Length: 386
Ligand code: GLA
Image 1 (cartoon, rainbow, N blue to C red):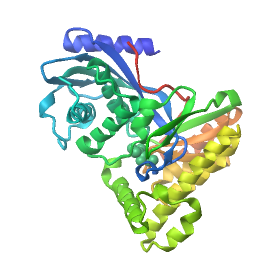
Image 2: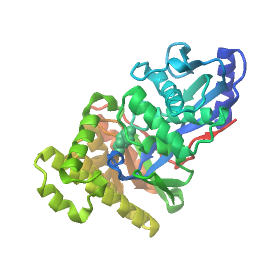
Image 3: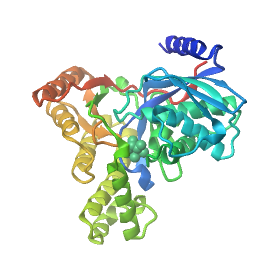
């Protein structure tokens, strides 16, 4: 599978640029098991990488020219000058790889141009971090081709900076770290304050379980302001409570903290973040004790909190959770930023097909577009393929 894709991007690169690439790199999309909207509050997250990847065939250049091409969108090669890259220029998909080159150079690294051809199987607009995959694959290719010697977490940080400053989306660090640092067969327990990581074994198939991803096909768009407003509300809450970030409010302090807050929206945001961090710890504890099935209700509780307190769900995501649980799933929740995108469903292997069918039927009955359902197999993070 990946050999065929490597051959395809290599051939397309040759066709575009006249000679072969120096290498081919891959970076995955992700789903987040638990820990949503906690990453910009210095909290905990637990993503796993998907088998879906962005592939980049790249050749180094030393003349300052950056040529970018995507096999997934209409339009030809975008040609830029590395030293003239400036944040805020817009530029669609090309802003992600261009932003990474900008972030690397802005941090003082020598990146003197490249020819790039990208092909991705990560669904876009589905809340599965297709943009982080584009960023991290570019960062890793530059790291190798220019001998930058950066660690995966540093590539994640620079990729996040590209997205925050160059593209202008105020995302946290989860998606880029997932793309850079996840490993096959594991979920990544990440402390977003210091980026301390632990690879937690997550072999559902061995336990007769499955994690379904249900893409509602409702377009998820982080740039529209709702995400930024949640983030600002959380920061306002932290300021009002006199803590560095909401991560510093323990579950035992929650009632007291809520009583001290005046704005009802900020109060709800704080309650979500504090309880969600506790849910990550709960899930970790259960997984460490081998009680995987018991994480189901924790996932569902996380969804209720995102729906009612954080207000980032939508009718379609709620319907996935409701219909999946009603038809025998162990638990379900939206995953990623919300406002559309995807949900995850934990289910017994033997019931997976039935649950997927029930969700699809519920969508048809409600007059929604048919969702796309697939199984999340915890896969490898960014790597060189050729
Ligand atoms: C998006 C952002 C992440 C994170 C999630 C919500 O995916 O890119 O940084 O904030 O939303 O958990």
